[in-house]
Image 1 (cartoon, rainbow, N blue to C red):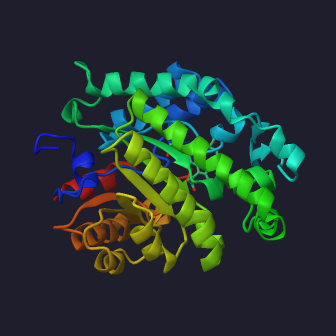
Image 2 (image 1 turned 45 degrees about the vertical axis):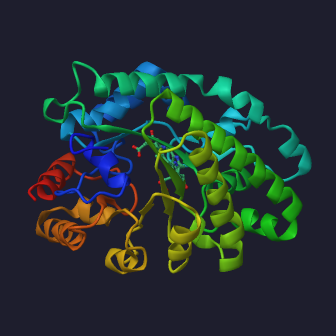
Length: 352
Ligand code: 1CP
């Protein structure tokens, strides 16, 4: 990438860019009135699987705020759904899946279905890339500068939902299975590792310029299990992408990993570390001086807005000056966030 490249991609390749490029996890979502308007038109999976809708929802925050990155509107649970697991997003409850608890449950999943089942997602990515890089780009000031991000859940986090059957604070059934029936759990993890690498390569072929692996529940695991179920599969996916699609950066997000985040950064091969709110970004920068970092404003400060948000946003940004940094939150935008606060944050980060 040269000076004229997309700022976000330049940072992911290791360049320090000032002011830092920014995008926000869950930047398309319930806090936006235009998202809520479309939400009433179709259920969640239909929105993910209809290229017209998914393209529009992905572009909503780009139009409003001219973010440096557009993240595909989809979900980490689309992969198990595409392999044949039942999935429902229940209003007020979150995702509900037919839990995988036995060999027989696992045998009903078929990773060979994924390519066909996710074809609409790939169509969405190619339309997004054509729009973002096209002659009539979204957000005049950002024309041709917005990077397109694909993503997947990392195998452990996806396995959490597949085994538990729903969201949870501690995913006891999943962590219990990893100890009590490691053969079954490892088979599930292997299936996910391969299917995730294949799906991310397909996203790259469709137009994604970088991909992010969300390991939202990585922090539940003790160190030995963290190495086995977080670091090892992540390294396998990164290696596969590096071999099959060289040069495409992978952003890793081992949420709540604490001190294990440093080992993850060293050993997985990810090109960028996305840091959660609780991680001291300057301390991490000291441990991995060459690795770009992404993050990590508290989403609740974005909700609160005002001087406290402004001060903390400047402090994070300024502490990373001179090293590769992508400004982001430490987790997703929360639904009650006033849209004006996001506009204010973008203005502050870009004031340089
Ligand atoms: O209509 C709605 O309210 C649905 C809410 C919603 C949205 C907007 C869900 C259900 N998923 C999404 C989109 C989504 N999910 C994106 C799109 C891109 C973006 O704008 O960021 C991404 C990247 C995700 C990733 C995702 N889904 C994660 C990893 C990141 C994280 O937040 O930790 C996880 C854990 C999920 C599962 C999921 N999907 C949806 C919900 C409510 C949840 C969490 C369930 C739970 O644990 O309670």
